[in-house]
Amino acid sequence: MTRMIEEFSAPVPAGAALPSLAGLSREKLNLALGAIGVPERERRMRVNQLWHWIYLRGATTFEEMTNVSKHLRARLAESYGLARPEIVVEQVSQDGTRKWLLRLPAETPGERPHEVEAVYIPERDRGTLCVSSQVGCTLNCSFCHTGTQRLVRNLTAAEIIGQVLVARDRLGDYPGQERAVGPGLPTEGDRLVTNIVFMGMGEPLYAYDSVAEAIEILADGDGLGLGKRRITVSTSGVVPEIERLGRDVGPMLAISLHAVRDDLRDVLVPINKKYPIAQLMEACRTYPPASNAKRITFEYVMLKGVNDSPADARALVKLLEGVPAKINLIPFNPWPGTKYECSDWETIERFSDIVFRAGYASPVRTPRGRDILAACGQLKSETEKLSARERLALRAMAAAAE
Ligand code: SAH
Ligand code: SF4
Picture (cartoon, rainbow, N blue to C red):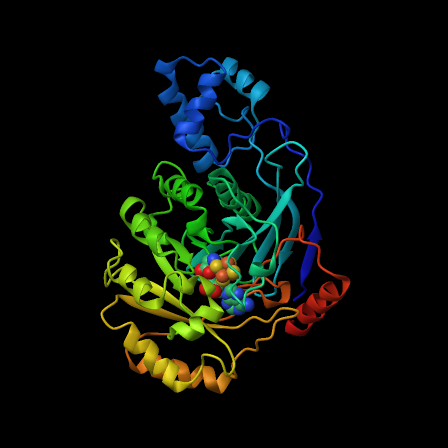
């Protein structure tokens, strides 16, 4: 099988220079309609129509919205567009994983446009889209590539939803569209994007408002219809926001734990100095939506000689006592300049055996999309200039992974 890298030169969609309605909440669509003089009494119905076309049908023009009056369609097209984030590069891995580098329009005139990545990970019975919530990340976890990136801003809810729309556009994942074909794509069910994980670039709980708004749009049954059980927010442990997220929004939760002792977690996940393990575990124990049927995922990256001993595994099991938990052991994905290495396979197996015997099923996450550097922690926007040496090293690593 060949690996395909497509430099994208898609035609610019009509109305691309106009503000886009794609990705907006019902409230914002309502305001947008008000701004072009649609009377208040009509707006709810018009919002429902736009909602249906944008999120259920994947419309990219106003023309195709046949139940909207011709007159209103023309007025909409004069003032608004339906553009999604622009695709800069699309890559398809041998295993079916797809990665898009997306350019976001500048927020203020003159600002350099930012770039983020979204990754689609297909399995037989599901397709998970990993979305970014920030450009870069302020948190500097020592094993994470995103943390080395300087530029940071929160994405808007529309930019988060834009990533989902791009993936569905490119996969042909709307009713009546021709579905993408290729190795690794789901063969069961009628949808290709069935789950969303906030595990791309950024700390979602630092972009709380955008993430909460995006989840409400994703979960809306008349539109994208991705139930909250199919949406997972991964956090490094912003304790005060965990309770709020559970109470007010209610998605599934994943915790980037990575260490079972504060002295080590302070180094690997420095936010631990502010919210140590005991506080984090308390927030998990009381996370409102969690139950045995809706377990919290604990992510644990396997770092050679750092956190991968049998004693660590036993301490992990002990720490999670009384918490409805799943464990996800993630083989470390190296990046140029990192001082860490991935644990040996035997060490990972020994660790996972201990976890397995304690009652946690299939705890190791298979690395996906290694040939396109799409795996965890390797997302890094091109807006951050890589040195020539880094570029070469990245290319060599991608080639070695093939
Ligand atoms: N900022 C959030 C979500 C994005 S990171 C968080 O930290 O949870 C998604 C997951 O990938 C986290 O568990 C993160 O710790 C992990 N990760 C980061 N860099 C990695 C790397 N190089 N190899 C493997 N996993 C990594
Ligand atoms: Fe940020 Fe998550 Fe990376 Fe830590 S692991 S630097 S919180 S993206």
